[in-house]
Image 1 (tube, one colour):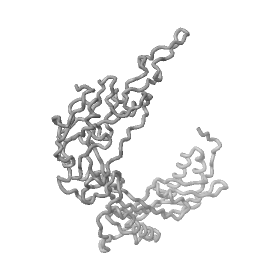
Image 2 (cartoon, rainbow, N blue to C red; image 1 turned 90 degrees about the vertical axis):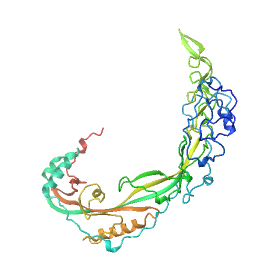
Image 3 (tube, rainbow, N blue to C red; image 1 turned 60 degrees about the vertical axis):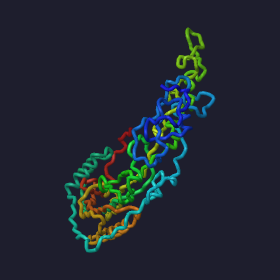
Image 4 (cartoon, one colour; image 1 turned 180 degrees about the horizontal axis):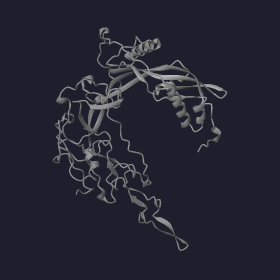
Length: 446
């Protein structure tokens, strides 16, 4: 075991591992709490051209140093409070990315995702490839289904009496159909940024291994169509190894809990070493049993060393920087509801119906031959808008669906009251805002 007070190792010491290099100033700060030899790399080999090295071990604190902490930087004159909610360590900012030798096409990469990179140009579909439009019929709701639906509606509502639903006279039924048109455009957007991971030794896929592929040359497929999700890919041949900017290559940072002192103020006696004890009706001052009268406790975070492993490089002293490609798959959805009764349109969206028309293509053609002109016009407008709405994204697939939702408007008479309600959807939901038999005065809200 090394003596914590031993002088720092010199640069001509025999290298223990190949892959890292340490500056002399880093040796002097790293020696007191470190056990074993410092890993080094021959200074004749540029750091960012390493194709690989032997695995290395992360920096470890030295809790056996006793009352002498290993941290040798600036520390406060007094022990800080024993506070478990201390702020995390904030080191210097990342390096200037302009100093990185970014491969062609990646010069704009920054630490966070940059602007989307435009996809290759596409050829719009030819008119000759337009498929034929075929539509199916719509369903209706008969009188028995209407009666069953209104009875079930009243039975589910504790404030409604079921007698009105059973005895009301169904004067007139007007079946119709709500139409729900929906267009989905599934797009792909690509952005790049610099990322880093602790370098633990091993192969480095850098520029010396080949040309980095262009952004849209990298193969990536969605996990599922029409489902928004994200994938991240490391761009090949963009890795390089650099000294950690947070710890400047020593593998540790000052403990933020004890601020490098290795000790914190005892939270039981608040640093006085004495506590008031009530015994046999008398108050006595005795030594604190938590700190044994010293008023200090060993820092639980760094075990008294004053240093903790660097949160950025995790103690490995080096970072492997690389360009990360983020592929964002987005399902862009837009819809239109056509319904001619007084039933609120939004109710049509949440129930099932019958698919009248469906089409899935890389680029769909707008509906133009349906017998209701509002559907044709809405489809043409949406499809045209979607073709140019995302210029920095690639269109992967489009899907349009036209559903017919059965709707029946019912005019009823109960006693001396005339009213109406609607039954809609394959689920035969009921919209009856003025149900004729209410007993809300008997309900208790808990």
